[in-house]
Every structure is written in C-alpha cells, then in structure tokens.
Length: 224
Length: 253
Image (cartoon, rainbow over all chains, first blue to last red; front, side):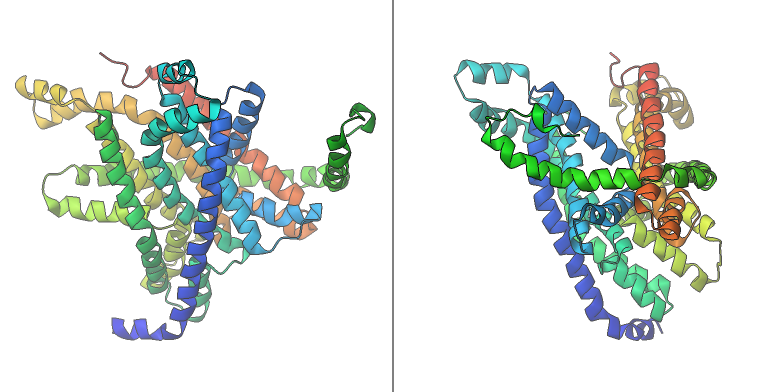
C-alpha cells in the first residue's frame, strides 16, 4: 500500500536528485563566498575605522531586518533595471552570499571582540605587523567563539536556499512543488523533500553541537 | 550626483573611476526618476492591510509557538525516554528542514488527510510548529542555565518539584529567556513572508501584487522592505529595553 505510493513517484526520483544537487551546489558556492566575504567584513567591522564599521553595521542591520524572500525579489527584479541581466541562479547566489556574509560578519566580529585586549597589546609590543597580529594572535583565539555558530549558520544557509525556489530555480523544494502538481500526494512528496534536507543538514547540526560542547569545555564554561 | 570638478584632476585613478561611477549612477538616476511615489500612495491601503495581517498573524503564531515550545520543553526535560525521544526527534526534524518545505508539507499534505483549512490557518500552524521547536530549545537553555546549587538548595529546604520550579527555577529562567525569545519573534516576523507563497494576503503578498499589476517591482518590494525594517527596529528596541529592564542576564552573584 505505502510501497505503491512510493512507486507512484518513480518517474520523479531523477528530478529530485537533480534538485538535491542544485540545493547542494547553490549552498556550497554561497557558503564559500559568504565565508570569505564574511570574515573580511568581520575584520573590517572591528578594524577601528569608525566610518567603515558603521557602514557595515548598517548594511548588516538592513539584511537582518528584512525577510530573505524580499531580498531575493529585490535582487532578481530590480538589478535588471540597472542593466545587469541576471538569471535565477546568479540572483540566488548573490542573495545567499550576501545573507551568509552579513551573518558571518557579526559572528566573526563577536569572536574578535572576545579576544582580550592584553593579547593584542602583547602582540603589538612584540612588534608584530597588523596582518601578523590578526592571523597569528587574534583569529586563532577568536575561532573558538566563531566556529560553533559558524557551522550553525551553514545549516541556516542550506535551509534558506529553499527560498530561491520562489524565483523558479529547480532546487529540492521546487522539485517537490512541481511533483505535487502532478501526483497529488503532498504528505509523501514533502516528507521525502524533508528527508533530502535532513540528510544534508543533520550531520552539520551534530557537528555544531559537538563543537559547542568541546569549545565550551575548552573555555572552562558551560555554553548553551 | 558626481561633480567632475570635485575630483582632483591630477589623479589618474579618478579618470578611471569616473566612467564606472557614471555607468552605475545613470541607471540609478533613471530608476529614481521613474520611481512612482504616487503609485505607492495609491496602494498604501493594501500595504496597510498587509502590515496589519503580518503583525497579527505573527503574534498569533508566536503565542502558538510558545505553547508548542513549553510542551516540547516539558517533554524534553523528563527523565524517561518515552517523552524525551519524540520531543528530541521532532526538534531535530524541524531544525534540519527548511520552513518552506514544512509549509508545503502542511499545505499540500493536510487536505490529503481530510483537513481542508484556509491558507491563513495552515500558515499560522506551520509558523507555530516551526518556531515552537526553536523556542523549546531557548526555554530549555534558560532552565539549564540555573546553577545546580540553587536546585540542590531548594531540595535541601524541602521544596516539592512544583515549588522548586515555580519559586526558584522559572523566575530566574524567565530573565534569561526573554532576549532570545524576542530574537525568535524577529525571525518569526521575517519567516511569515513565506506565507505569501501559499497566497496569504500579508505584507509580502501586497508587494507582489503591486509588482505584478503595475510592473513596478522597485516600488513594491522596497516599500515592503521598509515596513519589515520598521517591525525589525521596533522589536529590536524592545529587546534592548527588556534587557535593560531585566538587568544583564547572568550578572547575579
């Protein structure tokens, strides 16, 4: 009985696999770009230049304060008015990268601020250059604070990538939507879509939890 | 406006940057010239309705999420696995899948089970069930943040479980949970935008209508973005105020 229901979707599994592939590719590209950009922004945010810092802060607030769906619509429908022709994939990458960069920027900035000033002063006294100070003293210590929420942010990114289905990109969620128009069995179809996301996200959630426990222990405090 | 006289003429970089700046500014100016505030004003009642709908459906979903969260958290804090296992499985399932997939699961799945509900109800249900999982974790973290010594002391004073919870643990946990709960409320308001995809007439839907009726995506989506920012800054101010009012969490001796 339930087996027949699974069989009724037989023709759709290749499509679903392609959708899952699209979700993974989309998330992976924007994850890498977003991490690089986010670290750069986070370092600039705490860099001491007040103007740059407040510009970044204002931008992050704008992105955090609006729904991701609205951001995607803005990028997909308004950038073409600037003569920048975008396909749905590029628009999705831009939107996801921007989102990830903004959240990671705040995570990194919080990590950098958590490093005691004595450390920076000691590095300064040892004659380390700005870059050396950041790379060898501040960032390694900040990573302890940064890493657990960073992995958590990756999970959010993968989940948010489902929203790009709204501009017609055939990711896993869109495939579910397409299939359900043909085979009216929403319960099963979206259960399977959920399983697809679960397979990708759950290991990351476990990793985030492990990191949290380990970093918390290293820090000598209970983190929640 | 870029005034070419204001740029030092001896700088070669300025000569290179100038055309680039112009090529970016011209479409911006064109967009601003075509930007129709009149249409926005014309559609203002629609936006207002959308805003009101977004606010009350978010509020309702938040209350629902609190109920779901408290129940899940109570199950999760039990000692036996009978209640704990399902609560944990539910929380993991919600956290590892996107809200949009959950929304479609209910939207396309409930009629299959014989529940034909209006889109709005499905949306509120989805938001409550989704946020509930996160809220249960917030409450759990709050309760677990109470130092063991406090619980032990209340056991030693001969308090019952209910007294311990009501008089010692919950009042302190309450303080710790308010700021993250407000954070979750912000997330909830933003997430409610997804309900426009199952054609609930909320704020984002209003923007979409303007964008498609008049081919004015800039007017439609920038306006709703502004409205969402209004809600965001409001809730953020509330979070700051509540933090000040409750005192910084964890500052107790």
